[in-house]
Length: 381
Image 1 (tube, rainbow, N blue to C red):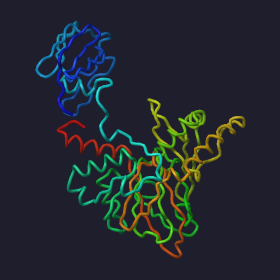
Image 2 (image 1 turned 90 degrees about the vertical axis):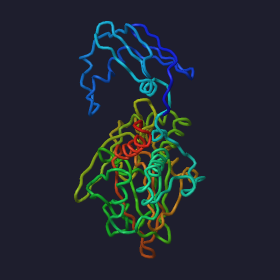
Image 3 (image 1 turned 180 degrees about the vertical axis):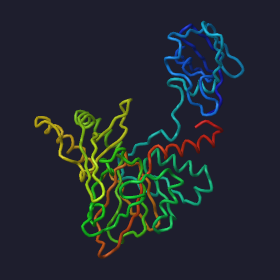
């Protein structure tokens, strides 16, 4: 962010007004300003030293002036003035500026019209490790598109853990730090079979749901086993636009998910489409293999099943699916609370297929991108 220029400041007891050189105008309530004094934060950690009950009920501004690259405020009932930098005020003004690039989601509905190589980020671990700017660019695309690829990852077990140090923190589950996606006799999870898998998100029965997933192709099948991806945010938004009643029902209905194996008994309830505080789609949780019996009243079931079927039907439509084959040494990372993934069937008897996967905590991936951006921009994430 370039340093903004303040053209003029004015105030009344309840509010500060800043006029910017680009013609913009921002208002800051006095209580909000008083709640954000730099001197009320620890100088080393930046953490707040006061609570809301420690603040005056109605702080009032006596005067305000543009002063040495910032704005100085004198309070009516407090001896110490406050100074806010113009850069800080601009960054925190309501409606001014865009969120950092890693928070700017780019939805893609028509996946069949895209190709993995052309339309998504690709990188090589050695390059990303040596060049922070390229790693930041790759991570930013991952967070914007929900999906990104790495190539040249040694096709050996455990290599995925070495590479994920460039992305975020690996989450250990009942599967361990990694899990092997290959056909085994009597699998405890259908992912460990030759069957095709419809689009889904992983582990909605876990709390919290894994934030990101990585899959590394150690042995790519020569026949079948193509990877399928779709943007759950875009599909949910399409449902919202075309079938709003179904969308609303799926956002407010708690769906039970469960998983049982020799070493785990997992259960959680969450809606198929989860909204954030501002009403935007924040997560999609869809896994028909692990949905448990619903706890709805009989009269509510028909409406829910209608909405559930409509959302599931969208996922089966080929125009919304990106289809690609992971070659040996290719690794894909995707947002497990946004990107639906699946695969076509294959025959392990004719052609072996072995992917190794892991989960990453959601906050660590965003943190990695924000830290790199802060370093690249001299302290502004």
